[in-house]
Image (cartoon, rainbow over all chains, first blue to last red; front, side, top):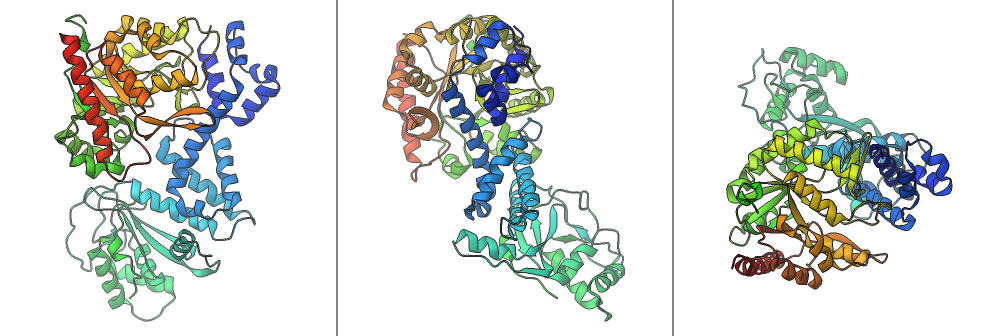
Amino acid sequence: MTTSELQACLARLYVDDAFRELFLRWPEAALQGYELDPVEDRAVRGLDVAALRFFAASLRNKRVKRFRHAYPALFALGHPHVDRLAARYHQVCGDDGRLGIHEDILAFGRFIERCAAGDDILPPYVSDLARFERHYYAASAEVAPAVRPAGALDEESRPARHPGIRMVTFDHDVVAIEEAVTSGRKPSEEASAGGYPIVFRHRTPDAPHGMVRINTPTAAVVDACDGTRPMPAVVDHVRSRLGIADDLTTPVTETVIRLLDRGVLTPVPLDGSRDTAPAEVLVADWVHDESF
Amino acid sequence: MRASDPLARIPYLGSGLGYRRQIRDAIRAATDEIDFLEIVTEQFMGSTDKDGELAEICERFTVIPHGVGLSIGSAAPLDSDYLERVRRVSDRTGCPYYSEHLALTQVPGIDIGHLSPLWFTEPALACTIRNVRRVQDLLGKPLVLENVTYQFDIPEAQMSQAEFFGRLVDATDCGILLDVTNLHINSVNHHFDPIAFLAEMPVERIVQIHLAGGFWSDGILVDGHSEQVHPEVWELLAHLTGLVDLRGSILEHDDNFPDDPGVLFQQVARAREMISRGRARVQA
């Protein structure tokens, strides 16, 4: 008896629908990939088929239940293709144990985003909706480190995003779509060329997660504050991004100060405050459109 | 139990509840009703961001970590990184023992995603003994293994589950977490007498029990952790408390939470009373 080969074969029968069906229809073909001795071979062939199917279904349902919890609006669409894609993900992206539950949930979101963006079956906003819920889930599940306040803003400051802040721009007004879907209304399918930027903030040890919907000029400011540019260069970058010839020193500075107050930016880069850092908390009480 | 037996040093813990974040506030306020908590190890083994939550729980309660991903029956070596994370949680809680499941959850390349039954054979027993020793050596405390529910037997087994448990605890000095609900569910789904099963088990190695409520699905009783404890499970517990000096009981409730958490605390209290009565009889 090898034990390892039997265990490998059993595990695959539990999680791999296609392999299980092959085994049930043509066991010789399925089992030829495993070095089983005669006793092990009899053990596998003697499994209770109905119970095996029941167990496999329970594994699939358990995994999809986690996705439903993390992507409530996506599943609230009630679209059969979402269920189809969830089943497909379960099959083609089997859990090998390296991802972990959290990463599996994020990977599912990315899978839906890519599938929905490339098909004409789902409404055009579904990819954005999945991306929005993925970032919102990450904001709630991930924790950014607490950091010390970093002083005041001056001309030498090189403002940067606070560790854990993540800005994402969507083609659709995903906040309105999410509200419509979860309240049973039909969402607008209209997209905006300018996009809908949203700042997500992961939890910190002291604050809950949150998100804020910002406007395009504010998004340009957040984008410019990458920790490398002093304030005059931030202003120039925003002017260039927005295609505005006027001097924007005052409105950009006011916006940076407002974002500093709200913990989106820091006056200087802090450890982990670049884009590669995990995002952070969202502050529900400042879910207002920002502008300057 | 021998004086040198590591299980003999495990104190009486009382009656407690599985820690679930959905009822975190109710649990924090119920230090008078809950003697100790059981946490799911994997929920506290990721990054350090859960350290504060774990520290807060440990300040209020005795905490026993209970893992679901060890795959103690694996023929493949246990995952060293995973074990290190288990050790971190175990050390932080200062628990007198660590509990897991007698199950297979992983093989190379596949995470089954749930507990699956072992094939009760000599080679599987040898692998499990090897793994238990490794875990106990690493953690420096006894491993206590739980009986799981299963939808099917794996044919051609060389021994019963009870014999497997018996030989495992003899070889490793590990303990048993008897999930009384799992025993009831298995006895219903597989048509055996749970009292006869207990008669074959090394009940003197049972350290702790689990209680929970399940539901019926397609003619199968499912361990849902979502209902109140079934009357048959209380009857089984009454029988068990006459056999063994239990150190602790945990009520597991993961879904369909009652509006009034007092419903859960009442079951915790009932278990406490039954175990206390049983201890008095067994110790007399």
